[in-house]
Image (cartoon, rainbow, N blue to C red; front, top):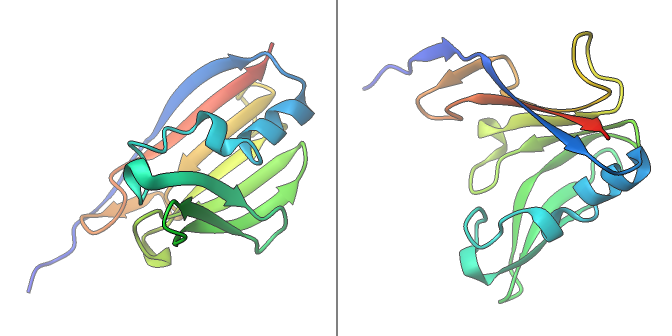
Length: 142
């Protein structure tokens, strides 16, 4: 029997300028995810991954579609308020118990730029069985 080690992991912060209107940025991040996400190297099906679909509603699924017709769940939509706020659980190739949380906000917490993407574990902790880090990526409309 092995013990599960848990540790608090600080967020990693990255910033980029998004030269789009908020509505366009929201659409690109959600409906246009397959246009910029590196599916060949960061997906369940690898080179056979075709796209990722996000059902645009709270409770909607985030599903990877593969060339052979199979689907792989990546998460569940937790918040849907275009273009202000999007949140989802994130667990490609893992179960919901291993999920982290990903959020895109136009009005982020104090101290962050006008648009922010925050990626973190649900409780700020990690175990050896789960996500290795938290990540916060911030974006600014330019």
